[in-house]
Length: 194
Image (cartoon, rainbow, N blue to C red):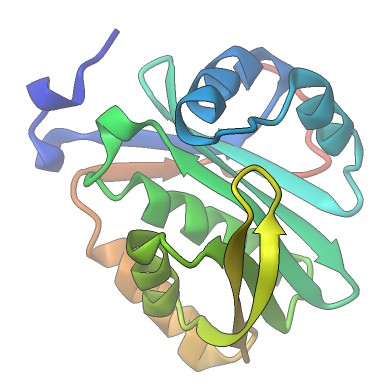
């Protein structure tokens, strides 16, 4: 198993690819570390089956899953359903890479806006989302059933505009190391070896 403390961020190689059933063991390991009420394997499997409206990705270093994220499309709105990074891999911009992949998938599906909810206490995630053009528009009281915590509702509008694509390209250029984004569409691929 690769330990992030052993890596120079500039030599890091991260593969971002479509989530498959074979990735679920690693996904669930992270899910259990970061959430009081983690999603189950059955819930992830049901989401993966909804290929027309869902897209899930994993970030891998070597063969190790170090993060994952999901997108749900509703008409021309993309909803970021989840993003999580193994705590040992924080500060290596894994979340940025996942958000880049999900945003681009939303654009490939003709999204004109993106939305998400984030815990009011999660200031680090809020800062990441703001860098991607998300703005706070409201609060959902008691949204997180596990703790009763409120959620900040955030939206990024105009994501299909050239200026937003330039923002994405800027974020990608600033990433340390090397990111390999799977060239296949996240959804609708054959599920073969990645």
